[in-house]
Length: 74
Image 1: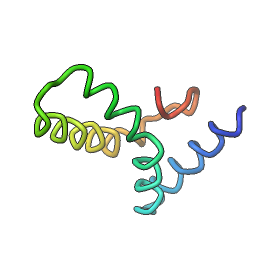
Image 2: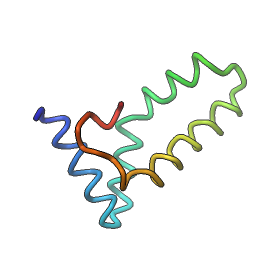
Image 3: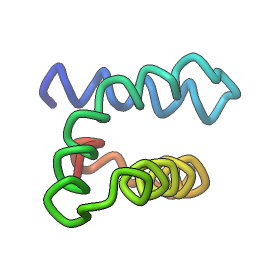
């Protein structure tokens, strides 16, 4: 398992244990990719911001079903 995936796995476990700072780190680590993808799909700035928030809301709510078989960015 690569170092990056080990870090992702640790962050996910910490979030699931209630560590809100770990989720902040996940956001910080992935926001560039999320913004880049949304930017390519949506022209309106406010809509992009809303979509980014929705992405992280869904990630947080589905994190307990993460399989730990891939990188978090997938």
